[in-house]
Image (cartoon, rainbow, N blue to C red; front, side, top):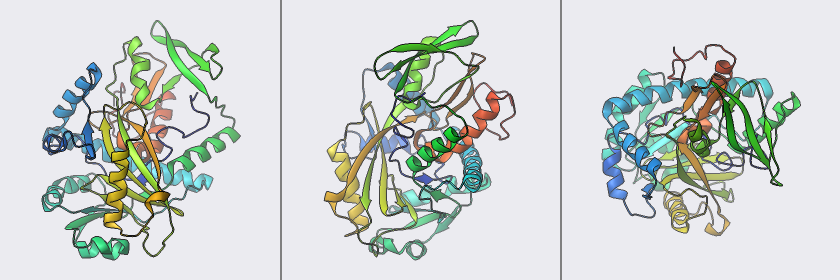
Length: 392
């Protein structure tokens, strides 16, 4: 069931495109409170809180602060890396099995730093990620430019970098819509333009769902099992049943340019630590995405934040694109305070969760889907992850 007219038209549509196991340091980390205060009220800040009279937001923020404790950050990094490694392997297996095409590149992800303090602070989490199996190598600025020559104009700004050679990039929308087509060929029924308005409980189980179509007609459907994968909208649907999720929308932006100047364009997927932006090459398109805005529960475009992404892109890569060619987009990332998603069972025996993936929805998609399919089928998901309601 999907309220949109087709697959992949929500937050998957124009995201950053990275399969970034190496992007495992959650937003909630010991440095986050000070950064948030420094960015407060700056409309173009990478992380922007818009405080609302919303009890969920305040609860979310309090839990976010708790997750910034060093021991919590370390535990969350382990969970995020574990799921990321599993998910990347499942994606690669699926790609080999199906031959699905989605502008993917296997050139790694180069994370560069323009601030000495930030680069120094990245050393400890990098060691922790390596301990959990993430291949992450620290580099000098010269090594970074050698890997991605398009960074040559920014060489004086770059103080260091890291390279996750096994990470990938690709168009999440192309992948999602292509996968839906393959699933439909195998007998899966997709009902688009169908909004789930209510879950009907009966004792310790879900008896059905109320669905409204595009004409406003409602009906009730029943099934053996139900998986809630509604992103930022999961919380409101489940609250009447007493299933309490801390999933809150973090609005992210992206800009897409055509590749008009191949000599200036990058081909390695990049992460700009200072501005929390990612850069991916998707065929003949350049995708730049990032920032997080909490408190904006719509996808309306903020011109200040759009302009900030374009400005930073042209600072790093002078002449790479013409601003008038920019295509802007915004989506609501379903974020938990810890960046660890809800995957697993609920208190209802036939109701399951696969939501709250935040900035890593594309990275964790295939592994999460594989795991929840195993759990629904009564099997062990096979990875050491803190699945919701699953005693491992």
